[in-house]
Length: 97
Image (cartoon, rainbow, N blue to C red; front, side):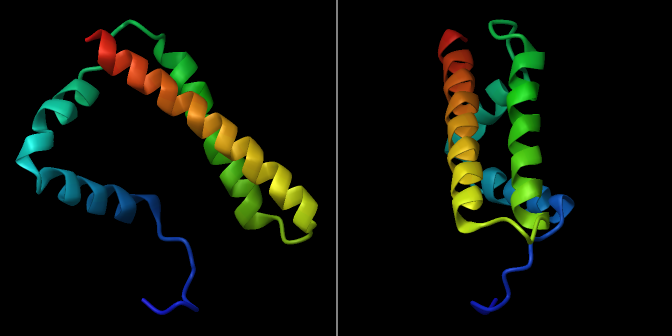
């Protein structure tokens, strides 16, 4: 892949690749099992809301060509905030199991 080819890949392709990468490491099987069986510690809709917000922000960044650099920076900061929130909730969920 060249540095000029920055076109986003379809989600299916990313899911397939990430599944192959994770399955390649048997030490991570325990973590995979935990993620496959989510606990009830954190309501799933809260986690899904954060993830949905992340996807919406990312779509705006990719599709809106008329954003100024300042606007893009604000969206990136928002995206970073929601990613941290999502990862914090996932970490708490895994620690409670």
